[in-house]
Image (cartoon, rainbow, N blue to C red; front, side):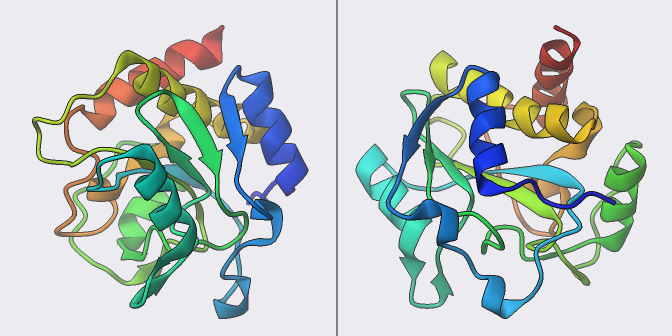
Length: 197
């Protein structure tokens, strides 16, 4: 079981991986910790935002909306490859998901199909929201995919996890399709390459 790294440690891990960072407001203290615990942490979850425009994306990820208050992730990754740090601690990104998937992530084994929503993912995953319409047509620029890879690798490297600790929202919660436009198998392969370097 892993305790979440400190906000400063998170920042340092991302910088060490060569990520381009933007610190948004008092992100280190912006969280949903009053709604429940954060940790132990077991993995990194990747999402797409269904938004267009970096400013709008970052604002939404930081503030959320009436029925789902922010932060909606720890880092919002815009198309230009920048990672905007919007919150740290418990964040409204994963929701309820499959306990069998969580067990597979912890064991770093092949993921089973997600067919239940019975486990609090906000407690156990770092989350990155990635600016994309999620329609399968909106492109994923090379700089953005590189930033996603670096973000996931930074967290995995810190905790001593392999690429099998990186999952998509669609692998966690039945009915979710994000991220759409690249495969999680491909992303895990890229993270694995980085971790070996």
